[in-house]
Amino acid sequence: MEKRIHIAVVAGVGYSHLVPILRFSNLLVHLHPYFHVTCFIPTLGSPPTASKTILQTLPSNINCTFLPPVDPKDLLLPQGSALALQLQLAVNHSLSSIHQALKSLTLTTRFVALVVDSFATEALDLAKEFDLLSYVYFPSAATALSSYLYFLKLDKETSCEYRDLPDAIQIPGCVPIHGRDLVDQAQDRSSQSYEFFLRRVTKFGLADGVIINSFLEMEKGPIEALTEDGSENARLYAVGPIIQTQTKSGDDANRLVCLSWLDKQQPCSVLYVSFGSGGTLSQEQIDELALGLELSDHKFLWVIRSPSSAANAAYLSAQNDVDPLKFLPSGFLERTEEKGLAIPSWAPQIEILSHSSIGGFLTHCGWNSTLESVVHGVPLITWPLFAEQRTNAVLLSEGLKVGLRPRLNENGIVEKVEIAMLIKCLMEGEEGRKMRNRMKELREAANSALKEDGSSTKTLSQLALKWRNLV
Ligand code: UDP
Image (cartoon, rainbow, N blue to C red):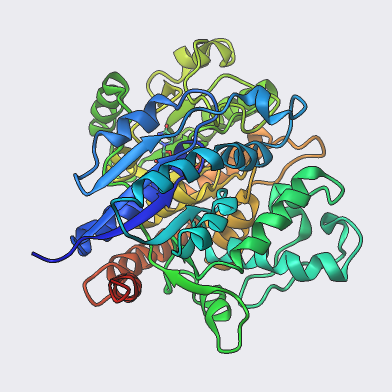
């Protein structure tokens, strides 16, 4: 029997920094069954139900351990601190548990590599101590990665806030990006969050490689720029798109309601509206969105959360006790009974996006949602909220031209007329038709990348071979 090759993995905190690295592990052990993955999962407070449910679906050659939860109070951060900073610090607080676990496991198991989520880069130091190759798993776009690495240069060359730079920034291989569309953590250069961000990105360069969930055919420019000869960046491995094949959320009631409603709709007639695992809107924005959907007169399936002034309020606790439907404008549900379905908090996204009645996706441009839409060929309305989502929106709407981006008014609100106009444009206009066609081409390209001789499969095999040769 072939010798087992052991890889240690450190996930990030939160559902969408756990699922991608597990999906990557799953693909690795599926294509190369002699690998065994041990995954350590840091948590801030108790893990979300969706994260626990996902563990029940893993094959026997992936072992997962939830690390002792970090108490949010121990992070010693003021209330309202940036989410990214909380995620990063939570991993830092788990380092001693990871160290302890690795130390005891290495008595009996020889690991060859350590792969860490992009928020867990402090754990890369452990690779040296345990003599492992080290990798960052970056669960987002090559464009976002390029922008992150470019900050190391921009930080030295500019002194103003990036959003005040007069021109869009030309990052090698990428579509030009305005400073205001760069990642949240870089929007205040005097903040602790920015300091931690730069530290995190510097660590990317110290790893033996960065693995990204994207593929050559979708992001040729940035991927080639990051891998060109003479580049000082860590070796890049584009192995995507890796997405879930089924939503494991544990909420079967919502699943049934959504799918049986979609079964009754015409092909390509429904707009799916969702802001990821934790995106939230203000009450004012919920009202405008509701009225915009109504005004568009198109069918919709909307996953709705209770309002919050913070765009990522539900990120660490997706479920909420308050019924979100209570926050819809008065009479909305009755008036749209024939037109739409509003689902509280969580819906089976994969099953929805793969349903033939879905014709468009109004998304917050989280990278998992983006790839899920690409794989199912669904064009987008790109409505970014936080993190690197604005950068993704630029790639999708201006680079790949598969999405329409709403304009914000002077108060940062997307108004109902704008929403209705974009929905009509996407669902029935000529521009929407072209976007749908481009999305279908991307879907084909995504399929090809994952075939046996596809770009991503070959890249993953090169990495697997490298690890195998160490044994
Ligand atoms: N998701 C889901 N149902 C929901 C909301 C989200 O299944 O109602 C899943 C979605 O399919 C995706 C993930 O949660 O896999 C969200 O990840 P993404 O990167 O898009 O956004 P984030 O949650 O990081 O903001």
